[in-house]
Length: 388
Image (cartoon, rainbow, N blue to C red; front, side, top):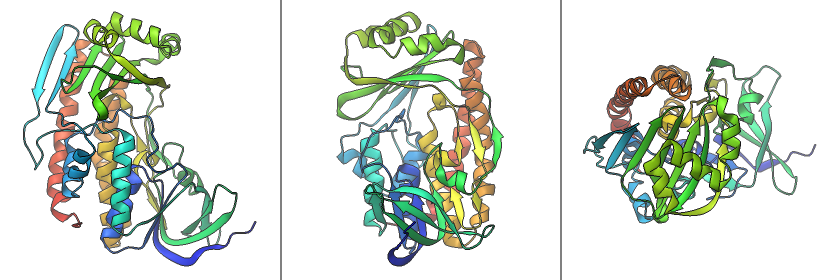
């Protein structure tokens, strides 16, 4: 196979994956003086399945990186309230100013991914799209990773050498397979969810609904639309498949959550409904000689807690700081210590093995975990972030 060297140059880092985890890692490395190549198979600004919600930890990171203004310039609405609906009981929580933030956001991925990727390029990252990673380079069989083999849309292959290869290529990570990253933890539960976008919904902040063997949410995002989802346990696979049809989706929502169902009946759906059949959470080994994993490539939790992007941005800076300091091994210790609690709580919530009182208790535990992460970010990341 012909594998010419890419531009006959060597990079300090190659980041495979240009979604938030990869783009943020690349941006921070470049801001620290590293020569970085970032590649992705998908086009810039392409959409992807997401709950969109950025919790306070994520907003703290974006403020620290001076990217909040870019989200606002794209018309991303600020979220000033969140509410939890437990059957007939509603709990409203105002988002109060803290850690330099006064609201939350839920940008469309066509917005968020582009904002961070553009910031990476401005910071000096060389970015290329339409490239698949076909494997990693090792100078000898058991040696450290020293680069990647890329393939473009024409089928041409390129050999790219780097001091570290960072896999930010999602749950089915090619980099994780290539380096044989071990699973440290594998969870058992996996909720199923159907997502759609609707205009004409009330903008009353993040709204989370919890009922008997069902959950739902309404999340205001860009262009006056809300991301609305319905989540079901695995033993309701038949209902999940039926709910991919718009009329059945509305019917199930009206049965489980009448208030939200009534609002949906008066709203306008934009685009098709999309289903996620679920995947049990996991935590992989995330660093080794010449390689690291970040975002869903490194660990994944049930999306019912809507904390994936928030943790991905946190881990991006932990990894970038460790690489720049020459202590990549510290990344795994820090990430693992901060993530186990969230992984376990997300698994319990995704199990649907709770009643309304039980899910409220799990949310109290989740809130404590989130606040602990916010305090850690404030103490360890915001004060040492490399300025733009």
